[in-house]
Image (cartoon, rainbow, N blue to C red; front, side, top):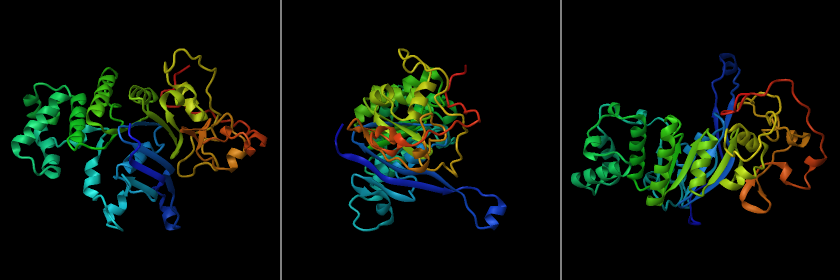
Length: 370
């Protein structure tokens, strides 16, 4: 992995106006959803970062922001030092054109079938980006390149698959076509947005292995998005990559896979590990849910201070009043966490504990039944 950053996000915010009631609109009131709030993340060359969190935590929005699909409302997103949106808007000195940036940042969508024209063959769908981005290639070169890639992802004979329409492909084959389309651009970074969630469990490992094999061959980076900690940990673990934990628009923990899962520091990370069956069979499961008895907060009105304090079993009044910043774990800048418990001299330790709420805690995704 190179030290040069392909993409860097600095204090990125993505806020949306949510659908308000008619009465609220008449009053001029609008609800703001802070889908991403103050996230910083850098992705070097040949790196793999897996982002995981519950539905609605902002991980997909963050991923789309990282590849220049979603414009941030604050903060900056750069590609090799070039601000992506200044390049698009033509502001200042543009050293890397926006068209080159978009070609270098690709996506594998969650539903590949929806991204394929049902009236066009695989060959035709894959030729379109080559015609646009590689105009120097002639018809024969495009066909040979596409057939080579089809065979490379395990679809053989390639001549047969190239003539097929989307309805003649399985879900796994559609996902492989989406992977080919991304790789044809020789990208520096690929966003895999829930790329295996729609596949049968038996096919997920094969698809993740294929993605990582081609990631190494093409020297590209991957930003892997998943609500499933098992999938995210598999991708990050096999690639010696990093894993990031998101909660209500914030990146609460980030670090090498072994450190984050074997030595989780954020209480939410600990809850996700606890809720994931067989993630570590050698570790005894704690008795009961590691959550306080409280509902998931409304993202339109997130809690003050630390956003996890309403569900955190370690929460104190300081968590309710102050916003934690990312700090290095044991002085290691590669492993960061947003939790006051990592600061020995913080007012957290002297503040009173928060009492339990009477409501039952909701189940985390993948939480086993009792």
